[in-house]
Image 1 (tube, rainbow, N blue to C red):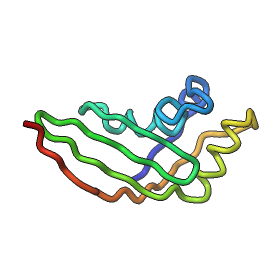
Image 2 (image 1 turned 90 degrees about the vertical axis):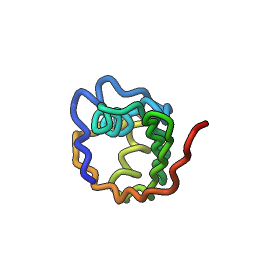
Image 3 (image 1 turned 120 degrees about the horizontal axis):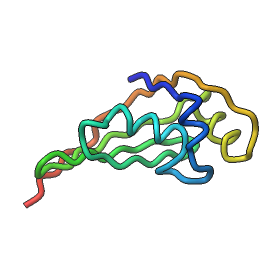
Image 4 (image 1 turned 90 degrees about the horizontal axis):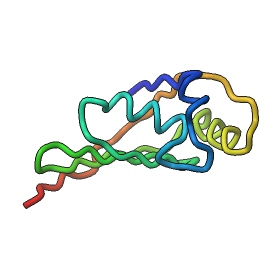
Length: 97
């Protein structure tokens, strides 16, 4: 799945915040029609999507370009918008009672 990390994501993203960084903002935008929580770490991304009475989890290993972006973003380096192709895998679905 492709995610566009924009100038706005970079400008409004929060450094050292797995749920509010530039990549997390892009992922949340893609899941805007659903309630979702995202956690972006330099080498791993996870998403929880809440839909009615079900939680579905997705995850992937971050590609090298995205990992480098996270390190640079968190360390105040000059970063530019890019497209991240994340190979999300569906892990589990849980039904809430």
